[in-house]
Image (cartoon, rainbow, N blue to C red):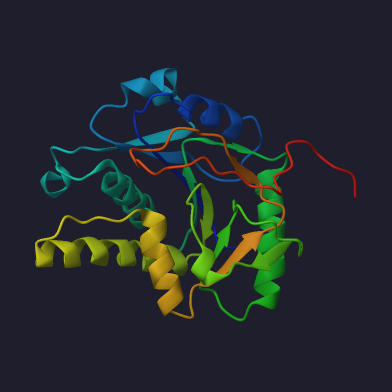
Length: 241
């Protein structure tokens, strides 16, 4: 199996969930190297003592260093951090992309790996995205087809080593095309991905059932029409069977 990297995107918001998320993340064993934390900005002071933890690799996405991104709306900046999280992965590695306001099911990492082994035996492609979180009541276990038109939410996603650089390029292309037109590069990361998924047969889009990541953040990142959503299949405790 290909190596797996975990990348979390974060921004200084109120209320703040990132410390709760990091505590939940490291409360269970992880079979991977240091977790990359991509910070929207040039100051990670809000991470507190987590900044110096050896199991984290903090990457500052300095707005001063990225002059073209300075005037971006907060939604666009979050999309830019998603791009950096995917494009900064080691070549040939799969990427688990997490947002900073989630918690995890018991044994989530090993359950994800088991599901990947099963789906890779079924899916005749190395190009796929597996949603570790979704708001839909899928019933087929351990994974279901995720209807492409219905995709949204980047709270927890697994990108195969083929899909990770592909989607990073999709996001980069979106920014480049907007700049070429002189437009503000609007669009949340999941909206941009949704449009790409609809237009293309691959990456295959799948969802873990039940979800092993749960959304807990009740305040959005500046979306006036934002609304709280969570997974109906998430199991906070181990169940028998």
